Length: 251
Length: 273
Image (cartoon, rainbow over all chains, first blue to last red; front, side, top):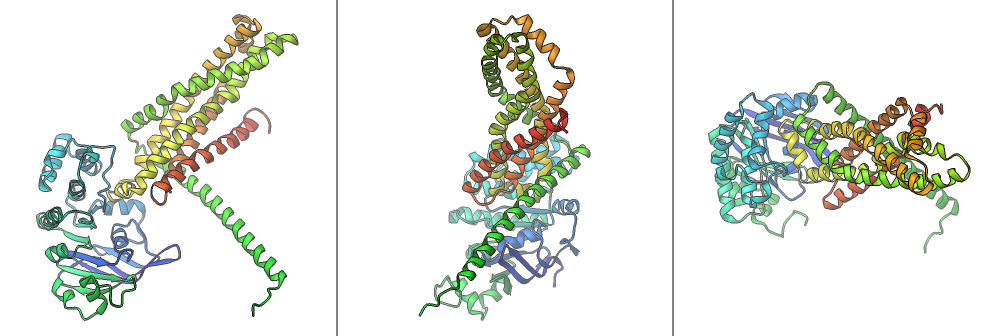
């Protein structure tokens, strides 16, 4: 079995009185793509935020590269986050900066590269997502798919070990969805990194995932390769994969 | 058959609910004060470590300070003029017209200049800060900053805080000058008080210490505006409606705090204590 780069161990997390994750455990294998599926509001995005130290659990532990990040100080978390890329659902590019400046920001803040070197790295990264012509554009000038790819570029520009993608294909047409799925796979191989992807798009999950985890009522109820999850005997998993209204999942 | 409730129980339940409501309000009040204080502490630590984004601070000086200049000048001019209009004619009638310059400049430098500037800037700038940061929160841009290993306080709060700490005292100087000159012109036009008499009275009444204390007030108001606007923005919840709520809340809370702090500072600075 491959090494585990990140791990949720018996995590419980509440928003107010609502329990989002309940004794949730999940291992993220190194150099793989793990896709997390589940109903809307099941806590999938929360898992990404826990892995990035943006949320702290109410109980349990979160480990990244063997370190328990739950009790880290903010300065330690800032250091940790420089090795983790996060691509947000709506890209979350800073709308007061150009696309180039958005992607250059972590390099300007965390490296001692010169402006010329930064420009070169940014252009190379934009090229890897097919957006080299958008360097001087403002985010508001990009389409939805381009915004997502620019978000990917910003997430991977520092060559992180672990890249977290929050719903990268939601709301996009099938062609752009295919392009983005392909980009995630290619970036993972190029960077030799690990990816965790939240998605509702089963076709793109089948295309890219090495492992799939299904989240239901705050806990992982199924985990395995795509084939293993597809063959699952769990009626909840089967209902979800078939998109059926009939079954044990309360609607 | 329905059970008839004991009136004593109804009263007790209502009392408990009332007490719970008061408890919640008190709790959220202290939570707010704690939040603002913590934010101020984090910002001070960042400034203390000289982790300042100078270019962004200059940009904020322009956006928050320079762009407020016209509105500050206009309000100060007309306030100085109306103050002089109300007082000059009366003062001349009662035979102490040569005190008008002193009264107008004294009030302007110690109270009206700093406070009016702060209220006007709060209306314009506090809302803008809350709206901008609030929009960034609801569009995940603040989380994006954190995920890039960057502290939102350093990136968003400190440049605005420093800009207002610099620009509000500067704007107050302009407000003081314009208010006094407006008052002088009206005193001359309406009550025939000569410019020399007006200025001589002003010079005799206000000292350098009064100007410094007025500017100190402006500095405190600048800190208040930046912290309240930023805190309201950073604690925004929900979508567009949440941003609207934060923005309105920022202006209301900020203006109330300006009046409270103005009284407290006047009390201690001008010998009330």
